[in-house]
Length: 298
Length: 253
Image 1 (cartoon, rainbow over the protein chains, first blue to last red):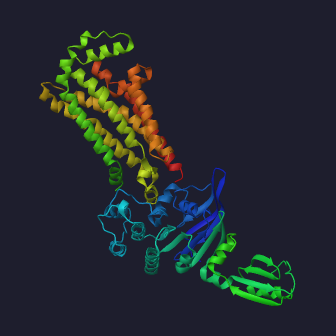
Image 2 (cartoon, helix red, strand yellow; image 1 turned 180 degrees about the vertical axis):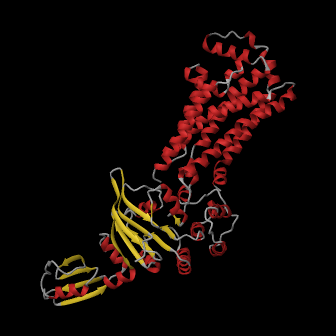
Image 3 (tube, one colour; image 1 turned 60 degrees about the vertical axis):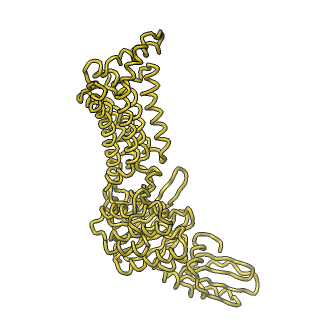
C-alpha cells in the first residue's frame, strides 16, 4: 500500500475542558476521494484545521504528504501542495475576482491558467466583480477555482456545498469529480450530506466525539455491512455472538436485529443455532451506517 | 502579493488619514496671521494656577512662527491625529473580521511570521508617510504667509514622531494578536495613547513624557534630540511587535 497522503495517530485537541479530538487516527490514501463524515461537533473542522497548521494538536501526530503538521517549516511546505476550501468560503472581500486570482496564483508556480479560464466560465465569474458582491454560489465557485488551479496534490474541503442550492451543489460536485478524474489529486472533504458523499466519494471516514468510528472504501462498506433480522416464536434472546463483525444488536419483542460490519454469513450461521423462525439479511445504506455508528437512532 | 494585500487592507485608513492631516497642516500655516492678531490681546488675561501657567507658556511659546508651528502642529494636531491613525493601522491585523479571509491567508504557503511582518511593515511605512508628507507642506506653504520654516526642523520633528509614536502602533498590533476583533485592540490602545498625549499633557502628569519625545520638545527648546527617549520607545515598540508575532505563531485560528 502506498504511503498515506494524510495520516493521524492518536490525535488529541482540547479547548479548556472540552475535548474536540480524543485520539483520532485515520489514513487517506493517494488518489482517493475520501468523504469525512461526522455529526456537528464531532471534530471534523478541528481535524481539517490541524492538517493545515491552523490549529496545533494537544498531543498525537498528524502527517500530510509525509510531513509533520506541527512543524511550522514543514507546515508551509505542506501548504504548497495542499489546497483548502473552508466552510464559509473565506476570501478577501475587498479584492476583485481578478485580484484574488492573481494573489493566489502568485504563490503557486504550477498555477493552471487553462483551468482558471475554464472555471471562470463554468461558474460565471466576472474578473472585475468585487468578491463581497458575489452570490453564495459564485463565491463557492471562486473558492473552488482558487483551490483547483493550484495544481495541488491534496484538496481539503470543509463542507464544500454548505448553503448552496441544489443546482450549484451539483455544479460544484461535478467540477470536483471531473477534476479528480483528469488530474492526479487526492480529495478529503467533510460533509453533513451523506447523499453527496455517496455520490462522489470512493472512501469514507466517519468520526464521532473525536474518534474514528468507520474508515473504509465505500464499496467495501456497501458489500460488508448488513442488517440481520432474526425473528423468534417468543421474546428474542440476548445472545453473545462469537463471530466477528457485530457492531450493534437490538431486541424488540420477538425480533433480534444485528448490525454487522463484516462476516454476515458467520453471524447468520451462529444466529441459526438460536432457532429463529426466520432470518432476513438486508443491505445497509451509508446513511444507516452513519447513524448507527455515530449513535444516532435512525 | 502580500504587500499588495496589506496595502488593500489599510489603504482607506491611510488615504483618509493623509487627506485629513494635509488639511490640518494647511490650516496650521494659514491660521498663523489670525493667531498673531489674536495673540496681541492675550497679555491682558489674568491666568493663575496650573492651567494659567500652561496658558502663559503656550502663549509665550507661540510668539515666534517656529514656536507656533511646533505648538499647534507637532505638539497638538499632528501628534493626536497621527497617534489615532497609528492605533487604527495597528488594529485588526491577521485575524480581524475585516480580513475575513484570515483562514484563506493562513492556507497559503506562507509563514505566519511573514504574514504578520508584512502587515506591520506596510502599516509602518504608511505611518512614516503620514508623519512626513503633511509636515512637508509647512515649509512649502510658509512663504505664503510671509514666514519660513526649515526642512531640517520638519525632518527631526516628523521622524521623532514616527519613531516614538510607533509604540502605539505596536501596542495596537500586539493587542490585535490577542483579541479576535477590531474594536477591543483599537479602544484599549486609543485609551492608552490619549491618556499619554492629551490628558497627561493637559494635567501635567509625569507620564506625559511620551508626548515630549513624540513632539521632539527638547529639540525645539534646546536643539538636542531626545535619543534616550526615542531609543526606549523604539526598543519597547520592537519588543511588542516581537511578542505579537510570537503570539500569532502559537495561537489557534
